[in-house]
Figure 1 (cartoon, rainbow, N blue to C red):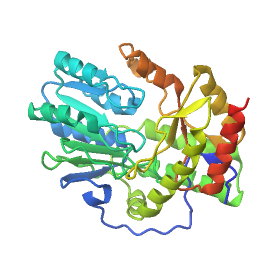
Figure 2: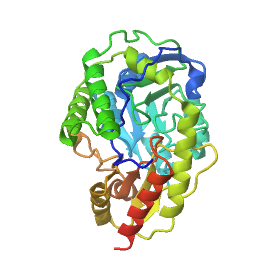
Figure 3: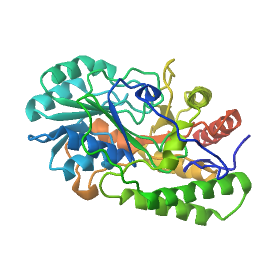
Figure 4: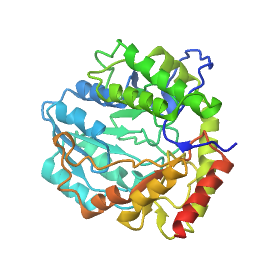
Length: 369
């Protein structure tokens, strides 16, 4: 089945019935530790920060990330700086070690990108830092359902869940440094209801042809604004817990891998864009198919070209430079180039062979212009 549009917000069948089940560390490929489910990924980071309770607050974070990863540190009084990455999204090791030497960070946050293993080359460096008492947090959002190895040197794992499937809210934190203190118990019912309304509205629009697109988009935007403005740390709501406990993980993994494999073959033959990861290793479950446009000016043109043909490809992420006082001024030219050229093609489990063939045709038509 080919859908009328591809990408953008997930949807959820209003008739779906879920039963709340137990979720454990093994469901996410994580080691034994104390797990807490939060309303958002930002809440998960805040919970880890509160548990660290550091006196010296110096955080080294990836330069390629989103503001919701950075702001919890800034708002908790941390001095923040960023390490550079290369075009293959691995860490620039030499510059990373130079910055560590100069900053002497008390905490470092790291992540794999888009489901691919981009951290393994740094394991020895992380191990040495861990032995020196530096706290390491692995953000597993992009690799949540990938079979790539977790960072064994991590003290905490954090994640946001909403990029993987239709769920109103969702974050998780895991501590290997003892039980969390003051785990959140209060849920954000207003946010959960608003998000559910948006997910149900999108389902009715896509699957049943009910409703008008501007109304559906308005509900999605309003719910997202509520989430962005949420303060403090909230527990995950019961509906979201039930959805999370009923995810068909094997089917999700299989379909995303199939979609990526079909589409990346076509992308590799194009001139105007290049896949960030042109091959799909055996254990990888991709979040998106990220591509670089060869020309900076082509990204906006390509995104608009896709959108006009009902394929919605997000920029993950837009540069956070200038947002709420944050600065990327010291980032390398490579990092700034990545922010200006990257675009993410949807390959998630909602879609199949026909949808990927359609996207491939649209990309080929753009390439032929």
